[in-house]
Length: 426
Length: 180
Image (tube, rainbow over all chains, first blue to last red; front, side, top):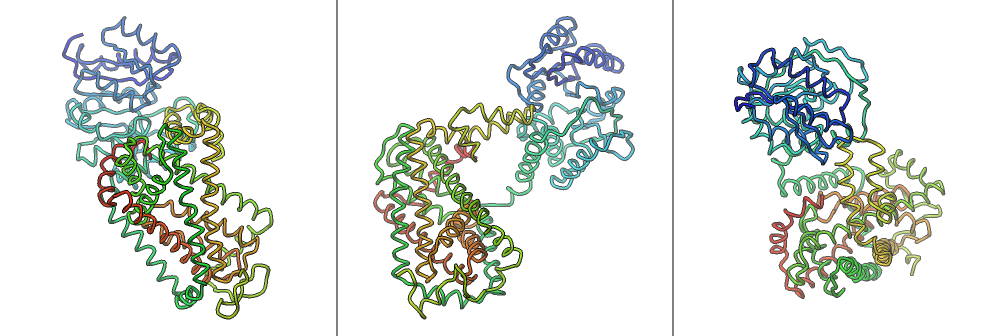
């Protein structure tokens, strides 16, 4: 093969033994109709296939020197496989399209020439431009339209269609974009387009004829968890994280609580709360502090058990101190920065390596979360069983919080204020 | 949650099988990877049945004492501590602590009180003012004990909190990826 390759077409293939040979043939034929011989290559990017696709691709590459086979044992995902293949491509214009040939191949020339001669950095086919004729059944159209609208509004993209598997890139532009692209799966398409626009690259979107192939059932893991989490991640990365610092999040959280407190005075007399607090029995409050203090050596002992399962034996007394310091840190610093303090303390004073420190914290947090959820859940079930959950619902919907009910009769009745009569539990 | 513990006690392929049953897409691997990392942390301890029992038991005891602290505060406010109040206390403290998971304010101040008051006021006839007072005192008691212990421990172990945060931040940046 000559070194004059200008255009590299990547065909991402995953278990496509039945169709790949025909797809390669049509692709070569189409490229040959508008490009000089030797100016293009077709790369079958076969991504950890479990069927006969690798053998077929290898054979095609042997038989025709315009065809190359890029193989990965490990499944890289859609974006990962494309990046892997583009790295090994020789052309300056990098093209890929879906191997089901859902997009009419007569658009291939426009796709390639947009980059090769018109000087665009990115070109993408679109099924959603006003002039295009891709009429599709509603079960495909509605989710796709919803997704693209979400990307347009949340990620502020100007394009109509982000997931059309029919795209081309200028090598230099793509190489500078890829380090910023985090997704390696289906969202790769959208992320490349969104980030290209943010960086001011010239992006061309043109209408294509598109015929749906195969069944496109909604895949809950991919579409909701996968794509949804990726939209949120990109939104966070582009729009939120440049604007928030630790100080801003702390400020906003504290402002929220202050606003809540001010609103509370609208239906709750702060004086009444202060009076109640002043009426609390100081001796019993002190007793509660002692009860709480007992839980601390237990935390130290629990942390000792966690560390010892990781092969580090420390005294519970020292570890209680470390837990105390980290929890104090959590009180002073937002975003649980205190957790990291504990890893530092055990590293600085007992030479326990950071990875173990962080892992042990993660274990402890998981146990905390499970225990709290368990406690809340068990009581919730018990409340539901005794019918009290309905009471909670009714109370919540009645706006019980809005009205300070007078202490009246009933099985749960509190005693009158402490000053009037001694608390019943003395 | 139960599934996580169950899988932690059996084998981690369970996660991959469950997610795999829902989808065969490569995103399934991605989702399974995140869940596995989480399960892997519990598994370190869960692999050893006696360690699992000790750590789990200690956790129950620790958080029960957290609830008992609140119930003693009820008593300080002259609330009759009936079985029903104890049950609601368990619920209110647990939900309050869950609300603190959101890292919005230092130490979850405000979030804990809010959740606690909402539940107490709705499920017991103590009224909003008393419920809020109990929430504030209960959380204050816990924070005072924590800070007192923290300050004493810092003096004992000769640790400066600001220095610790600076030092751990630089180490944390590397580790956070493995901990999200």
